Length: 405
View 1 (cartoon, rainbow, N blue to C red):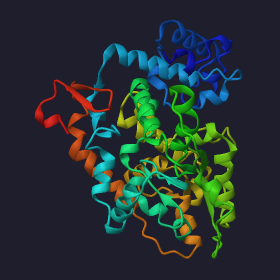
View 2: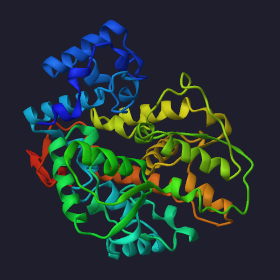
View 3: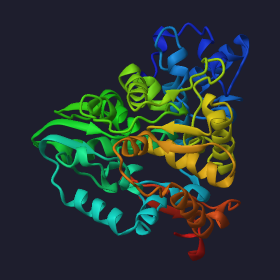
View 4: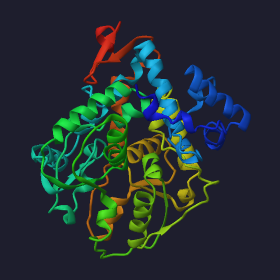
């Protein structure tokens, strides 16, 4: 199960291109070939399991479109099938197990933020045009509090998780169940077009869940920024330079997302500082780095590299268009003050429409850090583990009462 869907073994020439071009593995061609062969034939890898950041970029580098990232995910899946355990330190970050970091961020939203997520939760999942916010936007709903979106029904809750985080961890059985649940949720719903604010949700709904897990969604899917390009009215052009961080899923989706984000920024009068791919080679924001060795240090180091090598670091501002990138890079910014500001492109859009909006990113990042210290820091060195049942709920293995969230 999964192997034939996730990795096209019959196409693979063992050329080594995927791992040798990876900005995190950086293997020579001979070592790259050996690591791929080990993954195919033994499901093991001496280097990949230690250094991979789950950034997805290897799929872009494969000349035969074999999807080597799928091979890595399948290997992690097999390892989890054998171990049936995950370290306690990541339990707080499981998206469908409550409480988690997103539910507690929602608990500390201001009055307006809570009103928005309450309204979105009450809205039915039907309509000619529907906007799906996604889990990360649901921790910062003010990003969608824009007058030009007032006529669009926004609907969704944390219970409608697309499974992206589990996918990046290789927990494929959990994603399979999420795909079935979402198929049932949307079956028979009258939806013309669904807009996605998050490129990760967009890629999961448009490509991954239907192609690899058999989900069925009978509606058109569009990325929000691409839709807004034809609708946006700019009152105040902003004359400043910014960098741009591309999300992992956006690079796979291509110009529809990466191009629309750039067009969106330029239409607001911002000057985009772009480097060459050699200077900024498909770097991850750090969120996916936590899905490999489950080590928070990997997240911080990966985020630091993404900021440090971004062409916009000298302009003091880096724009993002993914809610996960916003939260991860924003948390790094809080831990490393003095670096460039991290802002979502929709914040610039609000500025361009003369909207005086609060900027809760710093508060939200500090809250995430405090919640982690309170909820999960004592589990960092715990040897206790947990597993996930078919619904994505945690089932503890040897944890005492204090260690259970």
